[in-house]
Structures are given as C-alpha cells and as structure tokens.
Amino acid sequence: MNFTKKKPAILSLQYHSYPDAVGGAWNLTHEINRRLVKRGYRVVIITCKPSNDYPDQEVINGVEFIRIEYAVSKHPMRLWSAIRKKIKNYMNESENWVAHVHHPLVGAFALTEKRYRKIPKIYHFHSSWYDEEKINLIEVGQNKIKLYFILKIIQWIEWVCYCYSKSVIFLSEYTRKRFIDYFPFKKPRMRIIPGGTDTIKFCPLENSSKLDQTRYQIGIPEGHKFLLTVRRLEARMGLDNLITAISEIVNRSPKLKFKLIIAGKGSLDKKLKSQVTLSGLDNHIHFSGFISDDLLPAYYAAADIFIMPTTFIEGFGIATVEALSSGLPVFGTPIGGTAEILEPIDKQLLFGNADAKSMADKIEWFLKNPYPVLGMKSKCRDAALKKYSWELVTNQFEEELMMVEKRE
Image (cartoon, rainbow, N blue to C red; front, side, top):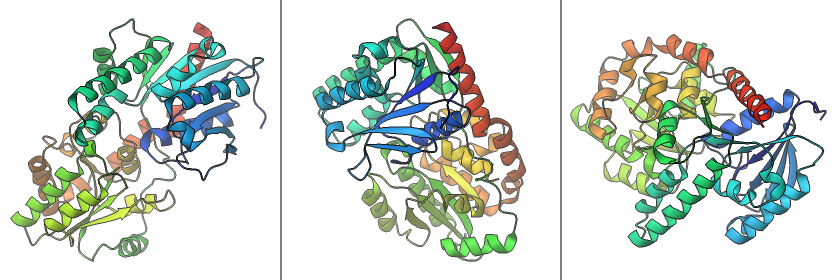
C-alpha cells in the first residue's frame, strides 16, 4: 500500500475491533479506517484478540492489525506491558502520527510510553465506560463497596485519557452533554460526528417477488407483519421490556398476525429466551442469533418495522441508521441519540417512554393501521443518504484529523 507522506499515520487504539468482534463501535471504526486507507493514510490498529483464533499481525482492507494475545489481554499488568511494546515496535519516528483512541484502558496504558505521549490524540467517545460498566456490574449483583472502587478506578482511567486528548469526538449531542457533566476538568476540543451506514449495501428491496421469497426464507408466515430488532443481548438494550410489550399486545389483540425477530447474541440469551417461553410467545418471537453481514441487509429490507428498545445509554445506534438506509421505518425509545436521529424524520417514530406499555401501545397501533408508518419509507431512506453515509462521516473525521495535527 502506498501512503501519502504529507498525511499523518493513524494509530488506532482499541480493546477489540471489527471483524474480530461485532458491535456498533467496532463497525464504525472499521468503516472509517478502511476509507482513510483509500485516501492515502496509513492506519495501524493495536487491539486484543477476542480468542486465540486470530494471527498476531494481519492486513485487512489496507489496515494493519497488531493483535495482543487473548490471555495477555485479561491480565492488566501484562496488557500494559504488551501495549507499550507494540507502540515501540510499530510507531516509526520518521512518520507523523495521530492517535485515535477508542477504549480508555488501552489509551491510558499507552500514555506510559514516552513516544506516544508526544503525539496528538483524538478520543472517540462512543459512550461512557463508567456508565456501561455500572449497569453491567449492578446486573450481576456486584458488592456495593467493591462496585464503588471499581467505578472510581474506571472514572480515573477515563479522565486521564480525556486530559491528554486534543479533541473528543461524540456521536450525538446526548453523548456530548454526558461528557460535559462527567468530565470536570478543562475541556478539550469537542465535535459531534454521527455514526454512519453503507447506503449501497443497506438499501430497499424493490422486487416484490424477491421480498416475498426473503420473508419466507427468514420464516415469516404469509400475511404476518415482520418486526425486527438487532441488538446485543445485554441489560441496557431493553429487550426484556420489548418482550413484555409483545405479551401485552398478544393478550389485548390475539388476532393480530405478526412475528418479531430478535437478532444478536449476548449474556442474556438464556434469560430472554426463557422469558419468551414462559410468556407463551414462542409463536410470535424468534431468536435468530448472530446474523452475518452478508445476510443482514436482506433482513432489514424484508422487515416492516425496526424496533430500537434501549432503556439506558444509547449514544447513537448504528442499527438505527442501517434500518433507515434500507427504507425501514424505526420505532425507538426517546433515549440518547435515538431521539436525535428519529425526531427530524417524524416524531411518531418515537415511543412515548422506554417502558413496556409505551412500546406496546405504539406497536399495536402500527399493527392495526400500518399505512401511515409504511408511508415514511422514502423519508427514512432520504435521511440516511443526506446525513449518515460513511463517506460523509469519514469526510468529517478527516477534517478533524487535519485540524488536530495543525494545532499540535
């Protein structure tokens, strides 16, 4: 790969990365990085293996992957040592570097290396690690005293990263405000750059016969409305509330014909499946597990409505704009960045609240009278094209990259 020497080399610091692991934040960084390479930037990722099945070094779409062993990543002191070693080995002093930090622990450990401290840094605030971990630890019943100290350590680690950053990028106004409340020190440069979607890959399916065939292959009975959600099966995602909402709809209007597909994997897999079975909803809700990137566009294109049921901390929602790009209307809870995406399209797309009753009322209204919402398909597609294409997102990030390098 021939890189332009006038452009800075980018050191991307991540705990996990796409395609090793799948998730909104990892997908975002992958899409930006591979486009930056096409524009003449050198991009080096230092990341951790999610398992032992990955090579130590690899080039994917022109991006250089430098991976840390799985066992090492689970031990803080060994991880710290490995990150310093990787930086020393791969940061060529003859190049101008800019760090792009995506995970506070990796970013904080990197700061102990002198060479790294000298280069400008952009911190990508996908969400607050403190907020995420607080929810996860409470969910597993962590001891309150231990919880307090763990969260204080996490808070300190995040603050260190912010203090050394020249710029912090946010996915939404919601995450920017959370940062302002959370970070009490002198603020770095701040900019909102939303997440994006591949508007070519995620597009409407116009062929009606192909649409019917896709729905049949997915398992949607003829005459049924197809509800879809793509989520990690974790505590803050609101899937338990969505299942409760479906139960309410079935009890109130048992003649309505619909099927909800829940796509994704996570720690709550067994718990959520048990909730569905105990509620007698096995004929209405199906767990598809993880859907590959090759198949996912067909699911979006074949669905009638997408549901984003988040209860806490939705910084943006890549799945939301993927659905919109597919011409698929989205019902979302008014949590975080979801409201910022959906409200400009139509306020009717927002649930009144994040509770099960609000979801049940809106979904039942749609099932009984789908045409007003289905009529929004072109508006949804247009919103994605105008605001959320990956090329537009990369343009904005490249502007910030050049601005930070000049300030240094």
